[in-house]
Image 1 (cartoon, protein in one colour):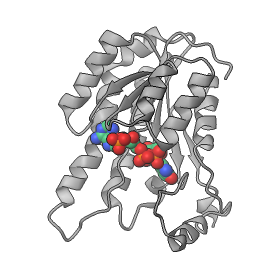
Image 2 (spheres, helix red, strand yellow; image 1 turned 120 degrees about the vertical axis):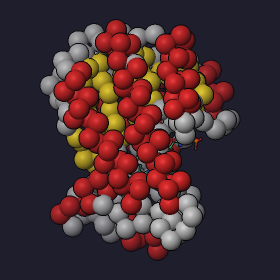
Image 3 (tube, helix red, strand yellow; image 1 turned 180 degrees about the vertical axis):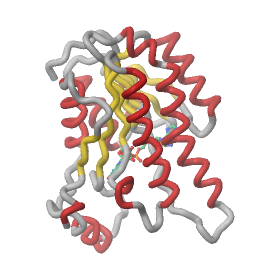
Image 4 (spheres, helix red, strand yellow; image 1 turned 180 degrees about the horizontal axis):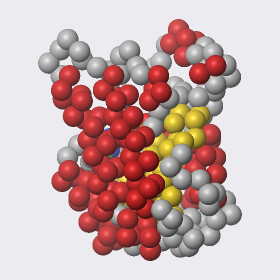
Length: 241
Ligand SMILES: NC(=O)c1ccc[n+]([C@@H]2O[C@H](COP(=O)([O-])OP(=O)(O)OC[C@H]3O[C@@H](n4cnc5c(N)ncnc54)[C@H](OP(=O)(O)O)[C@@H]3O)[C@@H](O)[C@H]2O)c1
């Protein structure tokens, strides 16, 4: 990464999979990194020993989000970037009793938390801007396609995607705001062979790319002074399949 940094990179929900990969890469590059976590995992100790600041945050309520904002203001200081990675992927419960609970859950994590964090941490992002700082919303390919079984999830990621446009307008030129929209990055443990084959077959590239493609996209955005209010699509060409 060749951008010069005056502050920390804050990434939400990053003690596993894609987020964890990015954190490890930034730490190896000597960046100041702040990680939010909800579940206690053994990896937390290793991250702290490598220099990461780990802050507890549960986004299921506004109080949880505001508690994180207070912690960042008192314990962190200027921010070079804010990456909204935390996510849940519940199936809809269209015929059951849980459909509104699921809708509330995805909206809390994918919309309310990013909205509040963007509003309340803007001054720290301005303070951390050498020439500019970055907000990145990690959304999903389903924003352009919809979803058969994750309707609430898709709608909440679409709202997150729209936050990119409004915040990019509001915060220019000191804070750039962009979206990274992946389709399959990593399978989950326990995904069946049949599911894996069906999913791989949805893109023309036909691979499970892993978290590196997100880390590369974030580096691109952090290095690019001219891109804001836009989206990087990481979907292996699903739209041309
Ligand atoms: N993996 C893929 O193939 C794929 C495909 C398309 C889009 N994406 C997007 O890429 C990003 C990274 O994906 P991933 O697979 O690495 O995600 P992941 O493994 O599901 O991890 C998501 C993280 O969000 C945290 N989180 C969930 N609910 C939370 C809450 N209420 N409060 C605070 N934190 C909460 C989780 O915390 P806990 O540790 O407590 O569970 C977890 O660490 C996500 O935004 C995802 O939507 C991923």
